[in-house]
Length: 366
Image 1: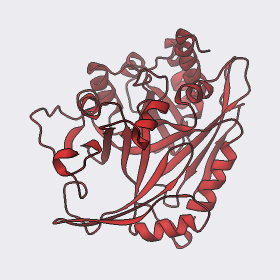
Image 2: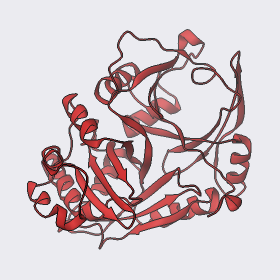
Image 3: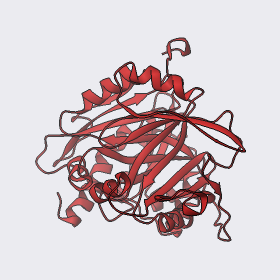
C-alpha cells in the first residue's frame, strides 16, 4: 500500500499498557530484569484517585503498568479475568481525531472518543478503538505536547536506575484469538485500519507431532506496525494457543517482540538478570549453517544461549523467546535482531513449538 492510499498513517508504537495487580512491583521487575528506566508516574499524588500508573522507558520502548486502587471497576475486572496482561497497544499518529473517524467510519467499535488533555506543557489528543478480546488500540497525538509523558503524569525520579539491556523498540505484537476467528480479525485490520496481510502460515507450516496453529501477519502501510494474529488448529493434543486461551480466558496479546542490535549481548544480560528463555535441543545447531547460510555471528554463543536463526530473501534474523513472565502461561517476550530479514522465523517454528510443548507438558497442559 502506498502512502497516498494509507488512510491511517501510523508512526509506530507509542506505548504498551499493562493492567497488573501491583504496578509498583511490576515496574521494579521490568527495570531490574529488562533494563527499563523510570519515566513518569500518575496516582493519588497527581490527582488520579482510582488508579496508579508507572511509566518506564528504554530507547523507543515505553511500557505503562497500571493498577486499580479499589475493586469493582474495569481495571480490577480485567486483572481478575486475565491476570496481569496487555490492555492497550497505543499507536503514534499525527491526528488522533482523524484516526478515530477513519477507523470507526469503517466499522471499528469506539473505545474512547477523541479527548484533549492539557497542562502547562501543552496538549495531547487521544482516541481509541476496540480490537480482539478486551485489547484496545489508542491513537496518541503528541505533536503539541512537551511534557515528560502526558497530562496527569509527573516525572518519576528514582535512585534505582539499572543500566539498559539494549532493547530498542517494538518489532511486532502477536494476538491469540479463538477457533476460526483469525480471518475475522484479519478482515478487521484490513477494513478498519488499512493493514495488509503480508505473510500467512498454516497448520502445515506451524505444526509438530502433537499440535498446530494458523497465523497471519498484518502490517500497516509503512511497515512500522505489525500485528500477527494466531488461532488454534486441530492436533492430537492441546496447542499452545489453546493453553493461552484457557488461562487468559479469551483472546489477547500473546507476546511482544522487542528489537535489539546485539542479541548476544542483550540475551546474556537478560539471562544474568533472571529472565528464563525457551531452549531448543543442541542438535538444532548441528546443521544450522547449511540451513541458513553464512552469518556474521559466532555459532558458539548462539548455541550456548539458545538463539535461533532463520533466513529469507532479504537477509536473516536471530530470535529467542522467553518463558511466560507471569504464573499464568500467557504473556511472554521475543527478543529479535534483524539482519535484513523481514520475515518471522518460519524455519524455526518446529523447533520452537517442540520447546513450548515441553514446557506445556511440565505444566500438565499438553
